[in-house]
Amino acid sequence: EPEVTQTPSHQVTQMGQEVILRCVPISNHLYFYWYRQILGQKVEFLVSFYNNEISEKSEIFDDQFSVERPDGSNFTLKIRSTKLEDSAMYFCATARGLNTGELFFGEGSRLTVL
Amino acid sequence: SQELEQSPQSLIVQEGKNLTINCTSSKTLYGLYWYKQKYGEGLIFLMMLQKGGEEKSHEKITAKLDEKKQQSSLHITASQPSHAGIYLCGADLNAGNMLTFGGGTRLMVKP
Image 1 (cartoon, rainbow over the protein chains, first blue to last red):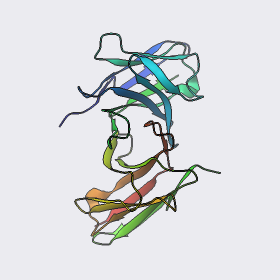
Image 2: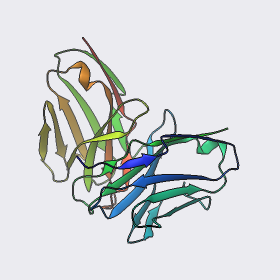
Image 3: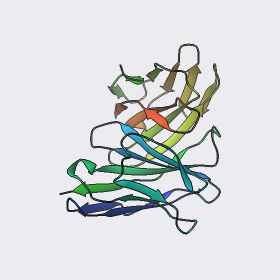
């Protein structure tokens, strides 16, 4: 069964450091998303990406965050200068289209900022 | 007020019992997704409902959508320990897969 894969599964970093989280989408999927879940809280939408550009972003997705799909396979989330409050589980999700009935999530990357 | 409310927040049932989890939106639903999450792990897609009155089943799990009430229910028949986990509903409120999630229902099934 096709799946969304994310790396790393867990990353520990010092405050102020840059972090890149990677996602390999399901091969025929065209819509890509990042969500995050702070421990004990709800899953929150960060950003959606289609046709090599951001389509929507939430207020959480400030200038410290960026996304790209540089090589046509990996979809990355970069946090430029991490803060303590960025500690969370980050989920990549992909879909074949809009309203197609399925939005698949990866296993998540746990980011711990010290 | 919360855009998406789930109830109950937690549930402990005896193995073999049926249970229902509810999800209510304060806004129009373009789609309602149900996921299962084990603690600290990813979200496993269960099913997605789009049309009012729609009902889908997967093994012993059935989900229904009441579009007028902006509400969905997830029903598990004859629960098993393998059903334990956190059930999340996610609402597509903008027709763009940008889901708003409920707070989750933590289910424990006692053998």
